[in-house]
Length: 600
Image (cartoon, rainbow, N blue to C red; front, side, top):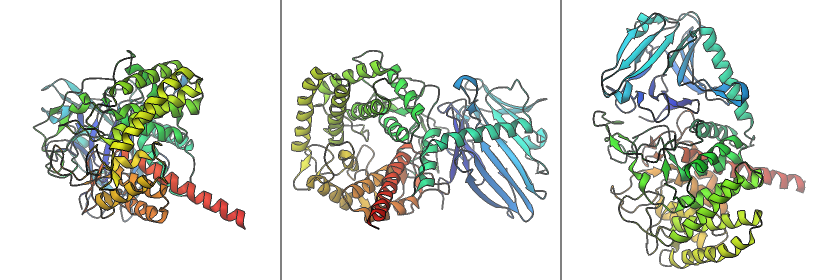
């Protein structure tokens, strides 16, 4: 079955996707949202790739080096055996700075015998919009284009350059390397230096992973998901990407294809909350600075999303010359959703600000800035919570009174009040508490549908929506609340399809949804766990984990019938929700074991 059988490598500046046979089918340089160098993922004929071709006698396997983001692809045929260790260099330099150049390294490790293979090195710069020409120079192989705009990449290698460019079979008898970078190197790379980069990068990832707590259950899954979220963070500004790709379709052959290489305030804030709970405070600090930098004017409303370098305008275009993933057009760059109004983002951001102030105390760096933002958020929510909006799922047509948006407006006031309590701002508490109460009463009176027996997608609607499951997570209702329990059961009955959940089943701007949104199934599992149906929750969780790819990675969506991964990849939403579920199960087992030991 076709699937998104890719591993991701990266260095918090950019990323690349590598197929299970060792081909680099997606890479943008110098940064995540730059035009692609390799885009076979979006057009198998003209997109460009960097492949290792062996004959059919080779068995190919793939794994990550444990607790790192170094991907190892193993090629074995009898006594002939070699590995490729793929990575983007990242390691600490002096004064807490990191070496994260816009380049990737392929380290060929000779294991035994005389393995043979050919290399297809076929960069297609600027999304393959023009012609890319490749030239052999004295020290490197240069590829350039000037049809759309001038751009170049440089390949350094210990292999014979003629053999690389012409895909001539080579024999491996010792360790070799290939380094493809956006910039010409001042210090000529060698196999020894590539090996040193590999070891330094390995140490960086091991040290980073060592900060993540160890869990009795699902430790591997939590660790891999945490590393994946780290790979989707952009060091330079603190932004967190929704995914590393653009235009991977929610359903093959349909048009729900979006560019996810941007920072959604909602997704990023949820990621930061989970990653900081795992002990990675620097990611949270950088993200909060990203937010502070975006809000120079106290009254300025937040956009729902920004470019990773804080761009506010994300004009959406289509690349007509690319055929799309498995023929799914259009291929889009940019995202028109940036100008939408979504009232939920303030509550999600306020939740993160509160969590960070609890963790770091009120002496937190930029504490005064965060208090100013808190007051600004309350002002905006107080004046806008009664308005309709586009909602979490970004409906592009009519605005509605979405339940999730109202719940997060309540959350914004609730967390702001908690922050005010920490700072002993009594006059603000007295002013804000009535607004919080008013929003809660509005939700209680208008979001509940007696006939359906659930809180529904929007006021006056009979449609169910998985996002409503988060009411309990944000503290708007209690897990023992009969209305909430009834909502969980109604959503499970209506949106569940063979163990996977729809976001919603009602028609939207593009017709009826036809695939499962992965994060929604995790939300449902968490909700079952919270209301006490833990055995059922665990069964669903185990089944969902089995639908990951061979490396434990998830995309945005899953096909109901075939269980193939769909949508942009890897998806931050999916992995943060996986971590939340896994931690709940692991903590519960630890609690049960502790109680059992007390009884003995």
